[in-house]
Length: 249
Image (cartoon, rainbow, N blue to C red; front, side):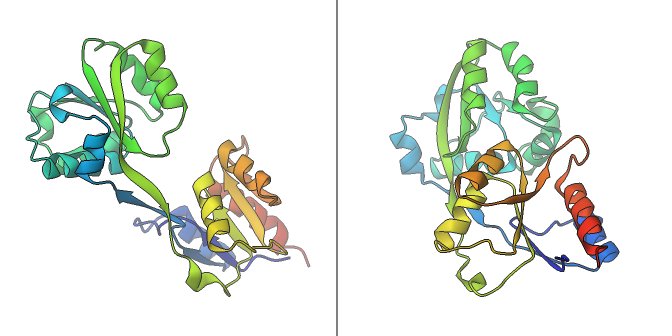
């Protein structure tokens, strides 16, 4: 069956040159964007209940923009003045750049990884005498604590925000040729919103091994998968699939 409509379970890209928009132009398909999950901050009281005293830490590990936002939100709610001496360990350049929203970049000690958490570890390892706080969501990847324990630093994880299922009830009678997922949370949201969901002719596109596993466990047939050596991005995988099925008579 030809592909005419696609629903991507993420916010719409803010950049005009997104590969998704190229797909729309090239293949004349309709692509809608809708986050299946969203983030909600926990209260300062909830953070305190996790036995977190912000003054006890000399370094902060920031894995995402959400972590940046919610660390400074909690600091403000606790009336904690973030010291100029605090060290920031950012997982990527994007996170470090976002940090400028809250601090004067050139006056702070900021250490930046390349992209993955594993690539940040060598930098953390150099500062073994620091006391690290890892503000994160309630759905922290298990590799993160495993890597920190492996290098033997003094660290603590605290939940500053939670991943919550979005209300999709307005989509109950709306059908798409392809649904695109990027996390197990997106799959969970689909079935929490629509417990009686039946795939029928809907094609399922998934990104990452954990999403593949979550979709398979729910009995979904996976039609499009990324990353692969041939299609390292989701848009490339969609492009390949659409090109194949839409040329068929």
